[in-house]
Length: 168
Image (tube, rainbow, N blue to C red; front, top):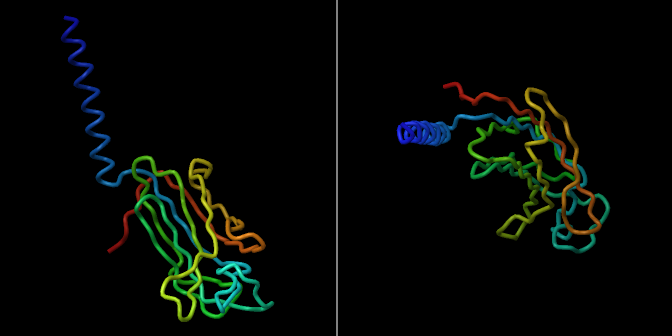
């Protein structure tokens, strides 16, 4: 009788583990909605700002933002010739949260003429465990970057308990 009870408990545990992996593989879980709205003090068209050199007041750059949760990554279009980019289109992203994904990473980049790779203007990380369910949150946070810079990123996010299904 004891072996039957242990066997039944083990079978139930294995079923739940397998079902959890199946749901994870199907992408079941909460959804994070993100809107990247704009940036502040993204200066340095010559690249000096991102290379650590001083910049002239009013210098601009061509910039974009990447958003990352786990292996999912999106990016905004490039805003050209501005210190204070604003994104109004192609700036909304949906992340189906799978497994233990609990961090949203945002990074701003400058495209520099004559330089193959983009240069980071700074990063920030949002702990998704601190985001309330079903409520839009608007945030303006400083980017972590080189000393002496004060770039900020403005964005909105919302965490929903249901999976995002794109319309066809």
